[in-house]
Image 1 (spheres, rainbow, N blue to C red):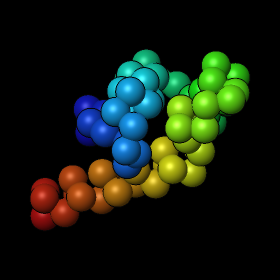
Image 2 (cartoon, rainbow, N blue to C red):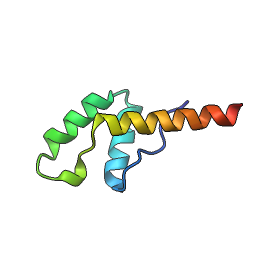
Image 3 (cartoon, one colour):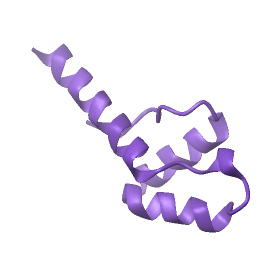
Length: 68
């Protein structure tokens, strides 16, 4: 897997920021913490580490299914 193409969030800007950090080998915990620190009062610019992990899991299982 080359890396995630998207994270399952509606906010396009947030999606791009998260995917960019994942491509730079940031952990979901670090991304979530960074977003909370950078945008403390903007709820739509925050995402939990669980949401990031869930999106990664869904993408990896979908990719595995296409290989079978």
